[in-house]
Image (cartoon, rainbow, N blue to C red; front, side, top):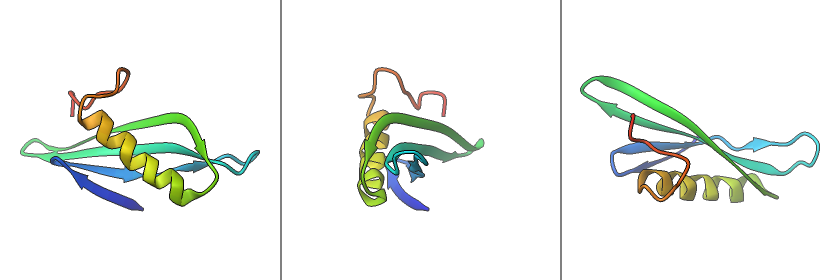
Length: 79
C-alpha cells in the first residue's frame, strides 16, 4: 500500500483498475489518529490513468486537496 503523511493525516492510495479498460481510477482512504482513536474516510474520483504509478501520484494530490479544503464535494471535517 502506498501511504503519505500530510498535515496530521495519512493518505492511503488504493487505486482501482478497471477490468474492461485496464485503466486505473483514483481511490483513497484518509486516516486520522487522535486521542479518541482512529477515524477514516474513503474517497474516489472518476479520473483514470494508464499506469498504477500515475494513479498513485494523483491519489496523493486528490487527498491533499481534500485535506486542504479545496474539494467542493469531499471533506475531512468529521475525521
